[in-house]
Every structure is written in C-alpha cells, then in structure tokens.
Image (cartoon, rainbow, N blue to C red):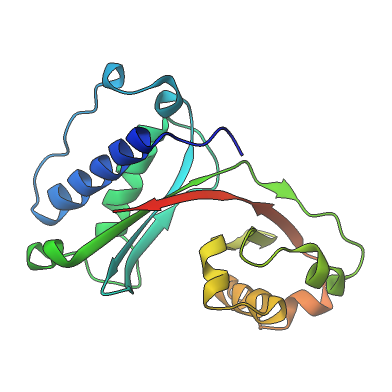
Length: 189
C-alpha cells in the first residue's frame, strides 16, 4: 500500500465525492477539478471505490481495481457512478442527499495469490484485511475488505464472491481460479 493519505487529503477526496454525488442527483454539471489545488499524491494514478449508504444500508457502490487516472478524477467518477449507475439501485434522488453517507476506499495494487489447492485459500486469505478478486475467463468479482464484517467466515466469503461472479457458491472449491488480493485505505464522512 502506498503511503497513507493525510487527513487533509482524505477530506479533499470526501469533498470531491460529496460534490459529485450532489451534482449527479441534482442533474448539475460536475465541479471542475484543478490539479494544482491538490497534492502530488492525489494527482497520481489511483484506484478507488466509493460507497454510499443511508442509515448503514448500502445505497450504491462502484469502483475500479486498476489505477489508470489521477486519484482525484477516479474518486469523482466513482462517486457519479455510485450515485447513478449501480445496477442494484435506482439513481440517488435529491431528497436522499441529506441522508447519504459517503465512504472512499483507496486500493493498493492487486497481487496474485499463489496457491496449489482451493482449500489453501482458507488459510492464505486474511479476513478483515484482504480485498479479494476472483476471476475465471471473462468473469470477475471482488469484495472490499469491509465485506469481511458481514461475511467473517472465509469459506462463506469465497462462496458469496463466486455467486457475485455468476457461478455456483462452491465453484472455488472445485476449480483453481485466479485469485488476487489488495488492501484499502478507507475513510468516510
């Protein structure tokens, strides 16, 4: 994981996300981001997820696993997508804005997990620490490390991740699939 963001940098990213969610819900143009107003770290390419909740219930979550654009741009784009393009939810309405809480997760570069037998994953993955990506062919799914709070059992975690990928829950037990892990720096309003 790169060096931790300062509290000011975290606050700036949360402000970017909040302004993007508000603009999206109100059908207004996004604020222009001036790179000179942000640190070098925030201008470096970064991967992020933006999670929206209302009263601790998920209201939208979109992210990317690969860093390919400046972190400030990535956070703004993910906030727009979480507010308007998460297929599980209708777009955020203006009357919901005051209730929405925003969490930003900054991702490290994913690293492949080297394992010989599927059951090895039960000891190789670290609950509460590892974000996990599984892939098979052109299908892929991920859970942020925060999902361990809801699915603390590694077998159940992997089974639900397989389901998210569109496979049977026990898919990971019968076939060696590609598994990568990453870490996040998460912060919220």
